[in-house]
Amino acid sequence: MFKKVVISLSVVGVGLLAGCASVKPATANKQVGTPAPVKTAPANGNAKKDIKFLDDISVAPESTVTKKAGNGEKTTATGSSVDAYLNRSSSLEKASDLQLKYAILLNTEVEQLQDNYLLKYIDEWYGTRYRYGGTTKSGIDCSAFVQAIYLSAFGMTLPRTARDQYRGCHIVSATEMKTGDLVFFNTTGGISHVGIYLQNNKFIHASTSFGVTISDLFDPYYLGRFLGVGRIDKPEVKIK
Image 1 (spheres, rainbow, N blue to C red):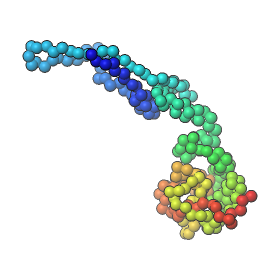
Image 2: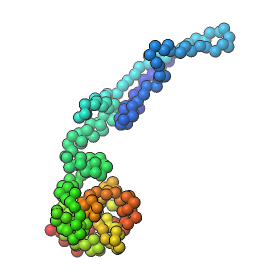
Image 3: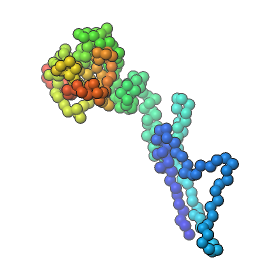
Image 4: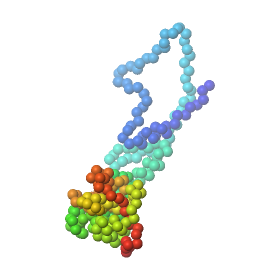
């Protein structure tokens, strides 16, 4: 006698959560009105073989949760991934407009944006036009922007120029970058441009072309001019 077999649907549950991909049933495609093909035994004699079936096969589906999204679509989460799904949905619902905006700009998940205080001050300057020597929201240059953010968000007074800011930093490896570190570039000779690293290889800076904006370190222009990463931790940096 065959033992009872329980087929788990946990693998199928994972497939349902894989985004846009849908899980297709593992059966042959059939057209409406077309009879199913009939399988015939090979003509190897007149002897008939007994056909045995597995008895008492049961399917044990794991618990499922169906959640309605804002666009009216329904998504079903199955199995052990239900908790992760609910936590993800909860984070999105609790996210502020500021977090959602910068999650898009940084191409990252909302949960990764923890420093809302820094984002608040960055957003106050975002889109401000570039002006060489400028220090206000009517126009600002790269080092003045960094100086303004550090003063507002961290209570630190930095030197005025990119070159002096570089000298006031502790240089760290690019593989150890973290939010708030300074990134330096050679755009017109020497240390001539500076920005603030955020995450996901993105940094905020006052660009001559676009004003205060977010750029990618792997953009060919910046990658070819990248000089290094500085962290503000030296005594000459004043903390208010």
